[in-house]
Length: 131
Image: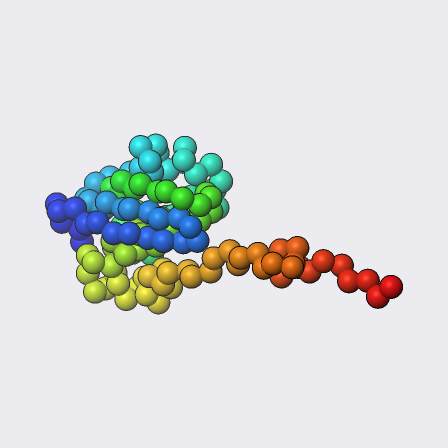
């Protein structure tokens, strides 16, 4: 369980970085000084953020205050999930095992591939003509 002390954690995904503060509370999640439902307007993103809490059965027992910067909404939601998972992992070995099995503690290292010179994009080439 989470005691009265505050647990800090950092989560990352694509270009986004989330700084998460986890404390005992009533299940409130605040992202950049806004409620979760107001900040992430897509239901899939809200579901993604709540996954680690649902896995550890701590949905109504903790309060989360997070600051998210960089990237888009999808990357920010992934970074927030990673940060919440890392904060919950410090609360006990049982929670850490559950989160590790689900893959929430692994940082998703996929980032945008850079554009190469002499090409249209990262992989797409200019059209080649024989004559």
